[in-house]
Structures are given as C-alpha cells and as structure tokens.
Image (cartoon, rainbow, N blue to C red; front, side):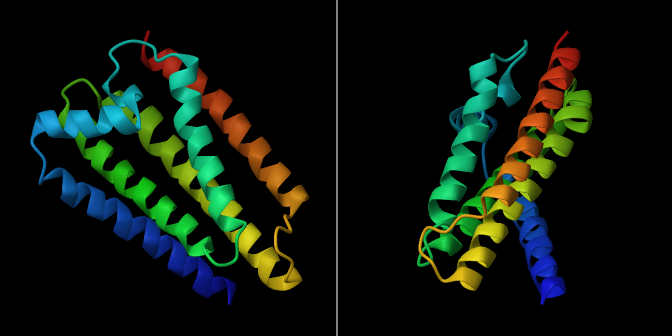
Length: 169
C-alpha cells in the first residue's frame, strides 16, 4: 500500500513539473513574468528578497494544504494544490534556466528548496489524510507528526534564507 502511495505521489510531482515546463512554452516572456510576479516574485528579484516575500508563499501553501487536507470530503483538493504548485515550479524553473545569469540561483536555491518543500507538503497532506482514515474523526490531527514536519520546514526555510543571501550578494 505504501509503495503505491509513494509511486502515485512521485508520478504526480514528475507529471506536474513537466506540465509546467510545457506550459512555459505557451507563454510570451512578459506574460510569464506577470504570472511569476503574482505567485512568487522572488524569482524576478535582482537583489535580496525581503523576509516577508520569502515567508508569504510558503505560509500560504502550508495553510491551504492544512485547510483542505483536514476535511475528509475535500482532501483531494490539497493534492491538486500541491500539483499546481509543482506545475508552477516547472514553469518558473524554465524561466530561471532561460535567463543568462540565473543558473546559480536555479541550481543552488530554487530547484532544491522548492522540491523539498513540495515533498514536505505532500508528507503533511498524506499524514493528515492517513490519520483521518484510521481514526474516522473529523478534525483529528496528528500533532506530533505535523510538529516534526513544520520544524523541518522552518529549518529548511532558515537554510534557504542563508542560500538566498549568498546568491544575491
């Protein structure tokens, strides 16, 4: 059962990322920049992004996943949101790779951290969905698991801030 779940989530990540790469080909550069600025403006920044511009996209993602994953009837929307986030990840990755001076930003910052965040969001989603199926209680949250995952996210976010400050020197 777990192997099937891992395969399903890995395929969702891969297909969504590839869909984002394909979607980039459909956009003009100015439209791509406009979409990127609406979702995560740090990608377009030439200087060090502010702390709030780094926290807001991650916090919104966590809140949306928690909001939808906790309700048994709409828990699949949390996975759809993660798939959409991975599609944007692929879209913005192509944008960064197309820029002349953004290879370091892509390789050291954008790709590894966004990939880790996506996996951690999936783990949050799966742990809530799995515990809801076991306990059959509406609103039951696995607090210990969520606490560990949130701590991991915070630690990775701190490392990301150091990497961003190094890249944008």
